[in-house]
View (cartoon, rainbow, N blue to C red):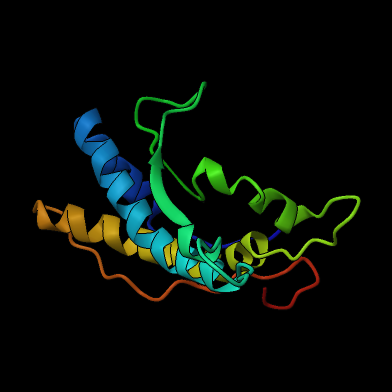
Length: 152
């Protein structure tokens, strides 16, 4: 678990709520895609590579995900993963009775969370500022602290 201080979140939410639901979801999806790309690249670079093609590492994608049950109309989701034919990514990540796991999703996620959140915030402010009426100075995101007090 980690904690972060977010500045401008309430202001950002107010500005997003002024938009239509359809436009709001589109902006959120675009921001999530932009923010998730560095995470996707790091996850792919840590994925196992085996001799011969196709490789799991070359097929890790970032894509919008359908609305989940319980999501509000203003919710947008994206996912990082592989096509179904690469189902064995789960075994690589978590292990099996016969094979030790070699995690690559979780370490990539953990390392890129602060950068990803910063990119998403900057993308949303940039899009809102481009529509006029919103002026915001975006600073670099703060690094999250681990429960032990150190940086993650």
